[in-house]
Length: 258
Length: 320
Image (tube, rainbow over all chains, first blue to last red):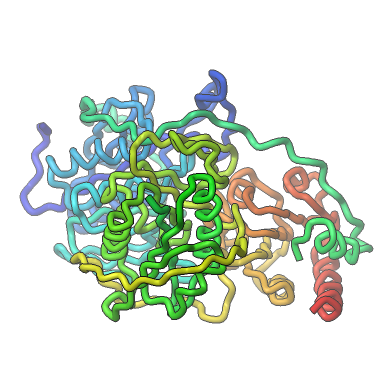
């Protein structure tokens, strides 16, 4: 399928890239509240995926690895994939499918992962738009790869891995083996390690391969019926800074929160 | 066709999340005219689940299951799902439940919906409200497949007592193999965690430096709350990253969230939107947080917080 040549024994990494509205976007819906309104919205690489992509670049530069990126989406997601190429990924794959639900995305990616024998698949803990938080685990489940959720550090030595998983109030240190899927998040690399594509990267990205593949066996196990925006907030109750006791009173008697 | 829940326990004790999903499943079961079965692994007292509407417990006691393993646990839940001929599995949103949830949904061929915040408004096909767009919107999602799986958002339903005559059954399982080995766990033992806390006290850049966190910790202590912080504070290294609350940090769905010296950037608000009651203390009356909070004090945190601590100490001594 791919025309690119990889030297033998180099780890093959696939980073899943979700194309999401920038964190500052106003969220509105159109078509009877059935669809997200993309008008005037800036799309970015899902922040959780960007931490994973940056860690993948580290493996490529320090340990030797190939890094491909993949997105399940329609043609409008291509600029986001180009950005991942500009950051340094070798090749991009877009599976031409409207990402209706998490399982559909996972099935499409799992198919590529197993046919192309990727050693390591890095996704994000969740996308900041649909927040399903299920795609990486489903990929692992579908093709029997090892899986680390909420991954906050990852080291690889030959085919052995050491990872940390965030748990309530702490972390768990896990040892496992490739092939592996991780759901990454902040911690995988530091925020300050994230890369802004430079002009050379952007120019090179234009010449890199962006492969478009047709979807297989699309899943329809769940779907969106409609969206709803939260009700406008009621006016805040302000309490004078000289009367802190009133705040305690309100929290106890009115809000019943203490 | 019982509804199956996974009642998670830690060191033999059920987590509060387990009682919440039991309460949720009870309401759903009554609407469907069916019963609630819980899978329980190494819990000391399975009878406890009978206080929250569970009819039957598949009790598993096995030393090789002492440490959580998502693959092995998911496979056990699958065995229970099949043995109960269930078509609806309900999980909590704890780290472990979410970890095994995506694996389980593939194993049982279930349409899977996470971040669920209400009882389904319909069951055929199952249609339910969930949080979406990092708490900036809600979505009604529908499951078209025969088997269904839900993960319930923390604190969205609450724990509701409902005594049932519970039946405990020893459940024999086969253990799947897994290449995931937990080497160690690092956990602050005596601190309330942000995920489990009813109340979260959070500090921002308005506190001027890490040396001023004493009063935040003291306020949290008085309230039995967890401490958290805004992104700039964790980026500056004043507080650990594990305390960062917001879109790319922890998401908080506590009953009460108190923000001190936090302006309320949209990414921060997204992380705390699903908290029930929000309080802001800030000296800038134009801070966006005042538009998102329920109660507020415009004032200097260094004056207000010590007064609040004193007031709460008096309140606690009179109310306990």
